[in-house]
Length: 261
Image 1 (cartoon, rainbow, N blue to C red):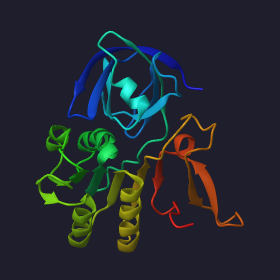
Image 2 (cartoon, rainbow, N blue to C red):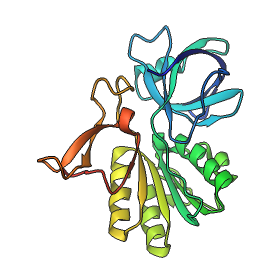
Image 3 (tube, rainbow, N blue to C red):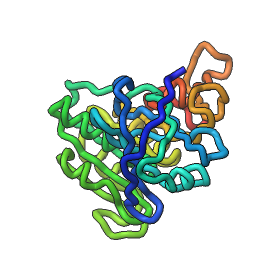
Image 4 (cartoon, rainbow, N blue to C red):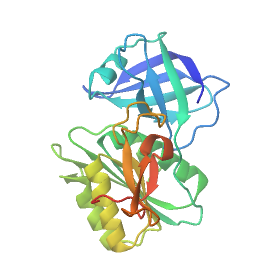
């Protein structure tokens, strides 16, 4: 069981009507934080289980969560104020594999999957000399773009309702990029349909891809089995095994996840 911390809210900043960033004080005894990891968050006002939220930024003193209001839990979290305490459990989950030998990488984030890709992109910039292409997809206004602008060699933005580089889906940009480039690695995070489309495109092009699965979680620690996904396993009669996204992931290789089983 990961330790629980009561962390003071440093600030809360709304990026648009439905997206906000919580900045919390980081306890000194908290361990290392890696790209793609998440924390369970809870406040006294929440009559629900803890909400699992991916990390969106951190330093030695603070750590951030950029959250989209999607239900009552994330709405209640949006009502905390500077000085309030948030119960935090983590860091939880595995991490992206980053290989300094990779010279050309593609990072894709859509909607809820944009914030964790900012942490990944900054780690790629810091730990490798790879040429980094970032593609972000939004339904409406973009956010956190300044984080990517500082580290991406190529930054492309798609929105369904706003004119940026492309009006439509981010996967339109991905299909073109995969057609025109030879990437050593692709990293994707976002809604299930985005992850599935990118995984299948990469498999067709024989490009390795890591999937940060944003499945709906309940307990966040592997106890309730709500967030399972099917992973290839030739030793099983059905040819797959149900793994827990929260406990065994949230990062999986595109070559191991079964979307159509």
